[in-house]
Image (cartoon, rainbow, N blue to C red; front, side, top):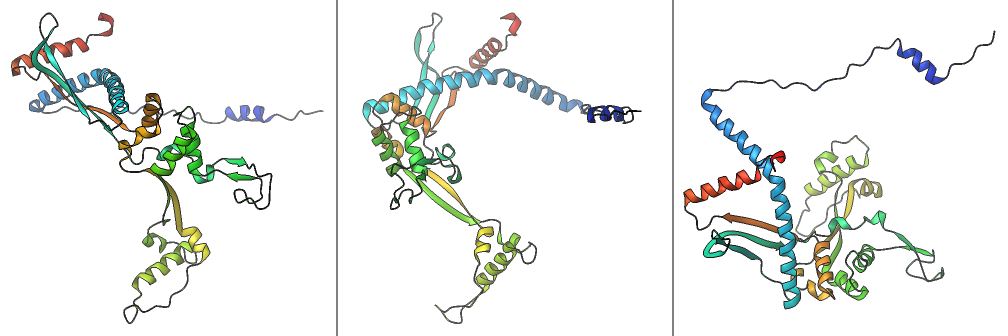
Length: 316
């Protein structure tokens, strides 16, 4: 009699008949509680406000983003024309009459601020271990300082940044991109310990972090017998440095860059791209409404505005 060996799929299928079906966990219902009658008006109002806020917030964010872009265009045009950093500004509109014509009374206001951040390009550059490796033009000469005769070399962070600024991302000339990196960018390495010293001392005996922590504490406690004297302590080993010391790349922009940034662009378009690349903050805030209205009139206008924005979709 010939027996055919069952496939893995067939074997699992037969086990399925014996196995217990796993119960899927449904969403746990959260209990409903009652509250005191005197608290109910406040909770009802809270839910009303939350509903209004959630319904209007996406529309608000959409309009704010559009205003940010328009104000940014105004601000950068002023910078390009005046070759200097413009002040931030307020936008104030007049009250409209029944025919839609502006009156002498102030009505609405908002403020545009463009803010510089030293860390604006920090996340836009590769880490040291991810830097691209390029072919060297030296022809594999043994005395080449760039590739040391290997034929290939690793680009620096600065070189990658120059290439990015020169690319369509920003579009600066090669000379301006190089000058920007050399004069406006700090590329440094910061060092710190892999963990706090007290945590090092809690590692297993004999481990590099444990011995490093013990040595550091011993050094901090050590005192020379006289001022300027020396103490004798165990040396820190290479293994302890490898395990206990970290370094990380820090890329930052120099202070006052906004006062000089237009110098690196050959056109208004390049200036705008460069400002966006360094991630300046474009903020529209400090809103005011119904500036010249009496309190009752402002309340009525707000009610009318809310009803406009909360019209159901099927009623539009």
